[in-house]
Length: 122
Image (cartoon, rainbow, N blue to C red; front, top):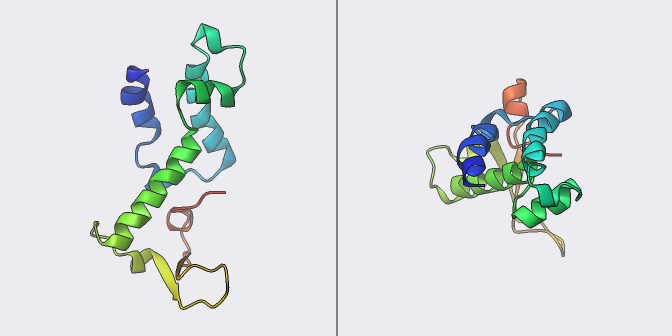
């Protein structure tokens, strides 16, 4: 487990928040590596993928990428990074309504795929 987390998963997630695999085939290809790893445990082979992840205390790679994106946005919002949150997002303040948050973000428009799918999850 230590080898997987320190060597394999490190390569699977390298710069994922920047290049953000947005095609389903790319996501499935990355997830297949972790899927194969979880099947290496003999006592877990008969379980489905979700149960294997739960028993090994792992998240899907897409869930980890979503978490990393949220952490990165938080760091930008708090000013912990050089990149300002206003460079990537528009702020909507003073939204009226009962269930609206005080601050909402909207991703800026872009032409290039690299920027368009940055912080994009379905």
